[in-house]
Length: 158
Image (cartoon, rainbow, N blue to C red; front, side, top):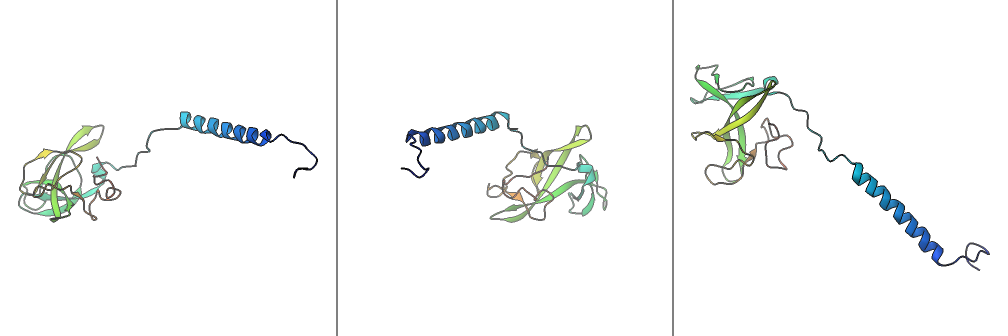
């Protein structure tokens, strides 16, 4: 006699039940895999014009004002000013990076060029590197791009 009472069950019945449960799980996983949405949800980002950013001219004057594409006249001296952001190099500490935005149409702006203090404008690429040592730099903690970028080592807004 077995645990189920007087039933004389074949020992293969348990294997059949296990195989059937595994098959159902496999079909369920396959259906989920086929119908899942592969897209990554996009973070909600404010337009540049709705953000208050730090501007800096070539003479070192800094001030806070709404963001805008291209250079703007400095609020202190009238010279060309660009949006400035702090990036962090593990060897050299905080570095100022000037950002030049272009109007991308549809009321959107995108970063087009960057330069470190005293450097030349270079096309913006993911993976900015320190001009002195060549190590990757990341947005500084107080940076307007720092939230969510520390793990990736890249700015999170475009």
